[in-house]
Length: 463
Image (tube, rainbow, N blue to C red; front, side, top):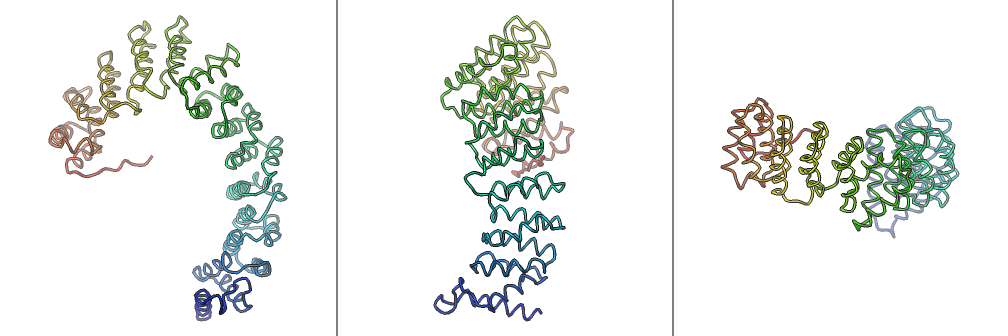
C-alpha cells in the first residue's frame, strides 16, 4: 500500500504544478484524481491522510466531489471521521450538511459528534439552531463547546433573535451559554434581552448578561444594570458586576460627562440602596465624583464612612490621595483610620500616569503617618511600584532593622529587576544587593540578587 500512496502523492504534486491549460481544471477533476484523494483520506498514516484532507479543503470543487468525500465517512474510524468532518467544514459546501446532521443525531462516538457539531457552524443555517441549542445541555463538555462555537459562526439575519427567543425559557446553563454566544456575535441589537437578564435568579446568567452589556452596552443601559449590580452577591460577583458598569463609563471620553451619567443613573435607584453602589462610583472615578464620595467618608454615619473609604480605595488613579490623607489625620476610630491608610497606600502606589518620583513621594508621606509596624511594612512592600534609584535609597536603611529587613530585601530586588533602573546605577545597586544577599533568609530573593549583579534576567513564575 505504501508505494501506491507515494504514487498518489507524486501525482497530486504534479497536478498542482502543471499549467492550467494542461490538466489543472480543479472544478472538473478526473475520476482517477478523486480516487487518489479518497485513498489518501482512508489511509491510516497521518501524513498521507493530511495530504488527502488538504485536497478536500481546497482543491476539488463541486457538489459531486463533496458527496464522494461524504460517502467515505462511514468507512473511517472515529479519528478519521472527525478529521474529515473538519475538512468538510473548511470546504464549506452545504451538500455535506445532511450527513453531518445525521452524525450529530445518531453518532455514538463523542469525538465524532463534537466534530459534527463544530462543522454545522460552517455548513448549517438557522434550521440547525434547535439541534445546536439542544447540544448545549449535553453531558459532554467537548460537545457543548463545539455547539457553542457553531452558534457563534452560524450565519443568518434572524439568528440573534432566534437565540434570544430560545434563551427566555432555557435552563440556566443553556441560557448562560446563549448569552455568551450573543456577546461574541456582537449582538448589540439585542441589548434589551441582556438587560432583562441582569436580575435573573441564577448568578451565572446575571454575570453573563452584565458582561455582555459591559462589552456592548451604552450609557443608556447603565441605570438598568444597577439593579443587576445590587442583586449580585458581594464578593467576586459584585466586583465583576461593578467592573462591567465601569467598562461602559470608561468609554465616555469626557470625564465630567462620565460623572454626570453615573450620578443620573444613581438617582434612579431607591435612596436606601444607593450607598451599596459607592464601590462602583469608586471604580468609575473622576474629579466630579471625588467630593461626592469624600463628603460621605467624612460624614457622621460610621457605616457610610466605611463604604465611602472603600470606594475611594477603588479609584482608578491617585486623584483622591489627598482626601485619603486628610481622612487618616482626622479619624478618631483606629479601625477606620487603618482602612483609610490602606486605601491611601494602594492608591499612592498605583502605576497610573504619575512619575516614579511622584509615587515615591507618596510612599514617603505614607511612612510619615504610619503608626504601626504593619503599616510601615505595607509602605515598604508597595514602594516596589516606584522604579527609581531614589526608592533604593529610601529602602536601604530598613534592611538594618530586623522587623523590616526581609520585606525591604524583597522590595529592593523587585526594583533591581528593572534593568533600566539598575544598569545606570550599577555600583550602587551592586552594593545594596550585597547587603540583601547577606541579610535575606529567602533563597529566591538571594538568587535574584546574585543574578542581577551578574547582569542576568529572572523570569517570574507563572501563576
